[in-house]
Length: 606
Image (tube, rainbow, N blue to C red; front, side, top):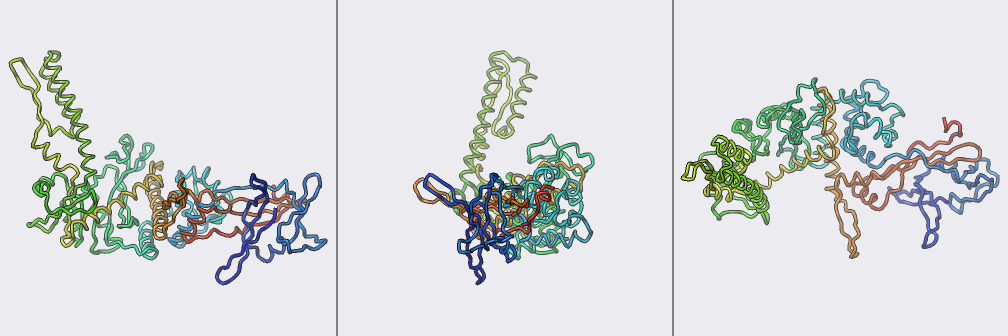
């Protein structure tokens, strides 16, 4: 075992970094294995370590172990020579390092450390509240869990105590809950701060705003939270009370603002509140709003026009009947993608423009759905028809109830069928048939949807492309619900629930920052193929976090023959993929912790 110097020229200066290397046997002969990375030794540390270390086993047999370059000759009788018991060298206190370190770097990149220091650290505390806020947000990014899970399982397994400078035993669920109470009043200032940082870091603009809503449910009765109500559950949990979250992002997915509503709040009723909130925080400006048809109403569109704003929204499918001729006409369609075509339609009587869009893949999907429901309804009608004709069902009231159940069970295609009971020479019979005109219209509109806007100057393909940016808002909700685990909610009080959403918002701010850092400097992971040609695939935020999560910090403990222990806190050496990711992000691992110490065995045990 020996120390290997690694030279690097940085900022015009030559730096020497050291790694501990061991010679091991392998099938291919002797090979050298790096045990740990020691970093750059300063003068005092170098004076202590630049010596020959004699390694003894428990039987007192000694062998000379060169830990330093061979050209360095140690003094003959140096009393400061440390004699290490090789068979007692051990590794202690392994901690997850890479992912939480990356989260902290993102936190600093957004200047959130300075923001929360100014907002929270004016009062004395055992742990500065700004560091507790960082801990909560990094947990939401890396391994989201409850405050109790953070205290008992996640935090003790990470190196955040070293990274944040938090003393041992100072983090508990009570301190985390108190931090939630302290960060909530700073929501508005936080949103403004993040908006400025996105502009400084990525040149993000917020003249086009994408607006969407989602819901998240709560575990428990939540009797002390008036926001929790039963409503339309996008999580398919109608058994639970829920709250509604409205999120505004720009066309690149950077969060602009968010708001929380009661769980039974209708989507269409939130727009006026959001418009007033945005004006209050950011002033009146000519903004363009993009949202889907669930939020569209004439009142909402009039409110945007009244403020001098612009909109590009999805129109109700019932309006498509007004443009039946244009939909059936095969002329003037613009191909924007191999399976997507659009047509712009100006309405002479108004200031709005409509855009007809149709997609081949969507048409096939809707056709398959219609075929499945039609087959089920026709099968049920034929079964009832046979039951009546064979005389097994003779009561007219029961016949009507059976028919009503069939129609209620298939609302998706019920309008395509005309069905009823009629008297015939053979008695009461069921008659049904397909409405060909309705079926023809249904086939024509399958795969089609309608957009409406007060932007008249732009081409149809440009309008369609802008509306497709709404997928960024949908992607934001997917990240919040999957990677960042905003659901379910376990808090029972309204302020804590709102603070939980704010922490998730902070986690998403870190997530989207990492996403755009990877996008601005595309990181490629080499993936060897069987043919020998490398297949490259880009990093995603979750892939980057998972890749760095294998980096650990640990204490290398070197017991000496005179009863002392030398502890070196080190970070494991990154592999090729990890080095590639760090290079693409423009980040460097810290060379060392300020922890290295020398102590007696008794004090080390204590």
